[in-house]
Length: 385
Image (cartoon, rainbow, N blue to C red; front, side, top):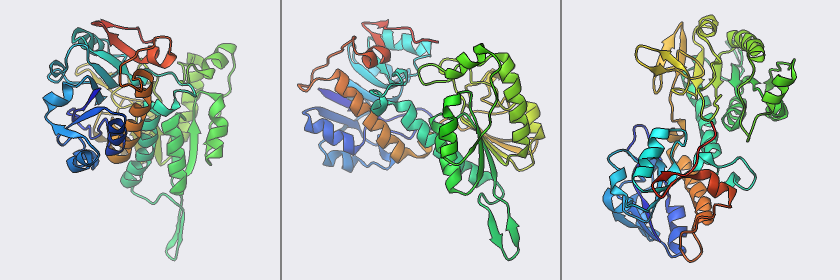
């Protein structure tokens, strides 16, 4: 099979869909691999490194013209016509974006959106959301430490003792847990909050204190269990109590890292304006949900994140608090992000490409069925919202 690796052209995207490591494996399996010249440059993978493992270098037209195209993000409007009808596209294709899915269908592309893979043990090796969220959680802490005007660890010096920074993590999924672990390594004192009671043990095992908001009704307990590995929207009664607790803890925190996202829905508001106003001057907020929250400015349509004051892909200072809204933190660690992502794709292709190099779509396979976004010029399935 002819596999194409185009360069990513969307703003702030530095990752690539295949690395020399995975290209070598594709070539050893008998595939022809075409890499767009410069595709891996931003991730520190040279054209020479791809050529050394058997890839051919070409322009975008040749890379997009392959039978199977591996991308990080969905092709742009100008890139999509370069793909031939019937070709297979695999990447993070934003399955909740109905307009994009329709464009892929109209182009006659068989598209697989890996974000839609089920959160099961079998799918762990191709879970792109987890591999990239892990990096985002790590990078969030490093960004915070760089912007925070004090030390992170406690220091005892001849000039006096410096207190450890207090870090509040909102959301203890993959990104949140990695943020806890990274902040702990830097010597911070950490508290963490999540709607799911099952993560309490994980939070505490990493050295953080779990902020417990007791459940008062069966409805609250059922929602807290989550679904498919994700949190579900909580009842207003519980959210009111959680908001009050987060408000009080945020007032004491030096750094807040919010990671709460619900697939297909607006990110929940965890740090309202009044909470930011109450935070200490010099505090730092890293909002991993930047640009995916409710509309914060009706005049411009600007969306916030877990905080309405967040501005996507910007750093702003509001009420003396530095708020970071970078929406693609994984791309700030492009070499490892690409390496992990490329391995995710390699494992996924084992499900749709036979050992003989032929495409085989087994709709009975739960992973294939869940990720299949478009086929035969139609949107293949409705992603649950």
